[in-house]
Image 1 (cartoon, rainbow over the protein chains, first blue to last red):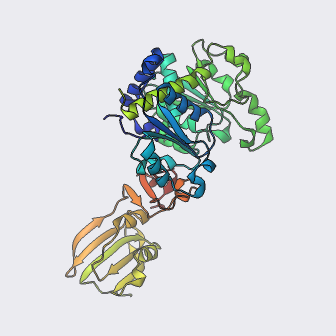
Image 2 (cartoon, one colour):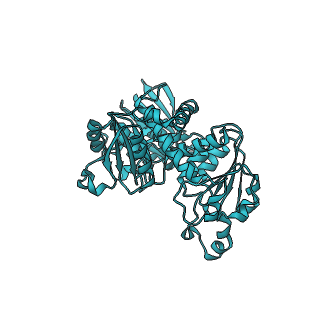
Image 3 (cartoon, each protein chain N blue to C red):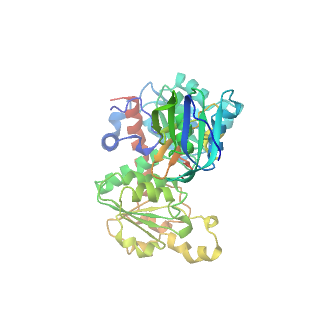
Length: 308
Length: 143
């Protein structure tokens, strides 16, 4: 099935073969970006951002501009007809008259799905509340694939707030579809992965995993360490926070125990969960990850538009 | 002994979990029926201990999705000339539209009112549905 004209709402919307097609195209773009610089000439991307986002919006805009296309849209609903109470169905049908492809971020969960039901152009979910953020997952997978040369046989450590972090949920679901991957879930008890990830992804898929409280106990086992921030206000009591907070901050001392080929990823923005000293470690890949995010979005736009 | 006569042509909804008959009665709008209807509660049952039964002396269109969602264990008997001509076992429907509503305040259906409330069956053994838009779980009450 071709990707042309399709929507991307959930990372599992695409088969592994289709994901592989996108990653292969992203590889070609990385190797020779100049040859793609006019591929989308005459095409318009609409960015419908119902809540502020700099990183994801810039990444999409940069992706389209680097393909030679143009961008229209809004970065907050107050500057659009949405402020007058226009429905998503009407907004997307109007935008579809002007643009060839649309990207939507909305704080309400499922908003991009509704847009896709009324749109005559491809719709990409750029984050809907705490629900899904599939292009972040594509960025994560492309980074891992590029650095590790495979998405199979990996031990993936997820550290921090695993309860509310949608990037973590999507990543576990996505990597769980590949062969022989194991998960090490590092978080305080209050912030462990939700039950549905345990039941419907890890247990149902019979994926090996363990849950621990301290990063230093397991860092030496990992091929990938995916860091997220633990917010103080998520803890039930101050005592636990004080006991555990340093365990969720990655520094050079902890990196000493990690494998020489382990890579550190983070969806960004970082606050204090990765010490700045780690940035100089060759295993720190979070800024490359942001760049891979733009390349994978370029590949996604090309595929959904059916541009060869 | 309470006696309810058999019906000539119509529907008998059997094996309703005791206490749930009244819910189905209201869901099928039988309180507004102008034909003969009987709701019999707490009928002794070998299999269930106690059960409810609804007898309807009329041909009506039953929304089997609604019934399956309330209790997938009930059976529907179609009666013609006082005989059962068809026995239907219910099951949880794969998809339900505008029967249950999403309770997640962050779900888009909480603001875009023209949108159907649609759920898909996500776990048949647990009787769990998920909202098509936000994946919020709706658990069918215990069987």
